[in-house]
Amino acid sequence: MDAELKARAEKIKVIVFDVDGVLTDGTLWFIPTGKREDGFISSVEVKGFSAHDGLGMGIGRIAGLRFGAITKRTSDTVEVRLRDLKVEFIHQGSQQKMDAIRQIMQEGDVTLEEICYVGDDIIDLPPMRSVGLAIATWNAREPVKAVAHYVTTHAGGHGAGRDAIELVLEAKGVLAEAIEDYLREAGGARDIGHNVQ
Image (cartoon, rainbow, N blue to C red; front, side, top):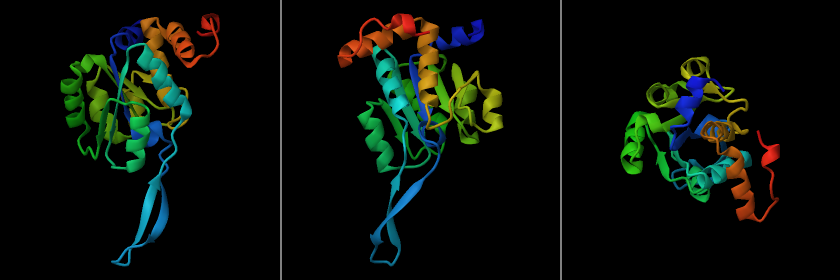
């Protein structure tokens, strides 16, 4: 990791994710649930989330990181998953993502420099141009990659969130310790630090 990236990443206290295309692969599934009285078909929105990202949030939380998510859409599925992951700052239906970033700054008592934002599409450009560390998913649109300080090695919905978390923990020099602490809390293997890079 180069010196500038490390300097940015080690200041991060909150990692904020876009949802569709970052925590999911961007696919939206709609399952019909029947006809409404007005004749329209009602449906339930279903999304797939990466378990790797979820476990990464658990590791990050042990190391003191906090997490947020901002999405333009509103979905019960997203609310359920993010609450399950104990995501502290959840902003759904956010047309202007910088408004949500400002709320997170106030609620979390953090500065822009202490926020990492992970995005994949042009709606993510305003926060990515403003925060201390901007990360694009591997499969992000080119204008998003162009403003990113780092591009993940995994695609959105397939571990990109975990890549961002591990980058920040590595920059802080606490990745191996955080993994060991996570495993200890989970009752898992001991002394794996020599296997973590």
